[in-house]
Image (tube, rainbow, N blue to C red; front, side):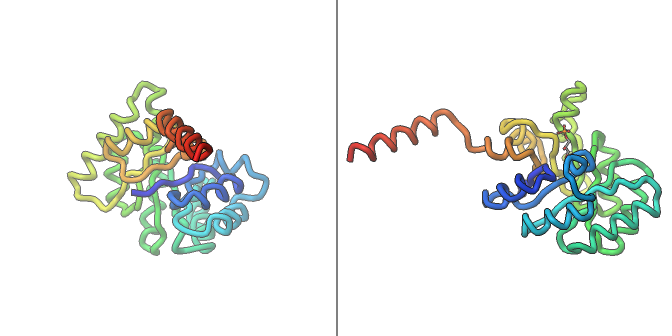
Length: 214
Ligand code: G3P
């Protein structure tokens, strides 16, 4: 299992790098647009600030050859670490096959159906990325989507892993794993909230009080 940070912020990346349990980062064009530098230059800075594990980058071009060029340029920054995220559309899926053939890791994102997961498997993608909370908000049932992806990938004995995204709370992270996600990605506030429990906090207060008395 891997826990990733879903953010393009350099500050978030630096904080996550020190948490110890975060092993990579996912970005998307919306997150990148909040940053000031140009996407590839910003990716390079993220690679430096978060110095281990995969960092997912999503090309913003729309034509086949331009997506390929942008993906290759991103991968060239750190071939062992950059994973190219592609939305699960026909146009983007076409790009996955040559990229995977060149040894570039790819992931299909914004996934809501087992048919899309099947194509992630067929194209040799590392990850299939369902948007759990967005599906829940649309009454599709976020965890139902994860169940369906897990079933098809298990049936295929696939090496493609489920990376659950659009997770808004610690319980949602846990539920995604219980429903078959292999890995999760979440914003920094959700990652920081993972260990929070009122009884743990009251035990810590009790320990602190005992220390003062002794
Ligand atoms: O990485 C995917 C994620 O950022 C999209 O989910 O619901 O937070 O916009 P959402």
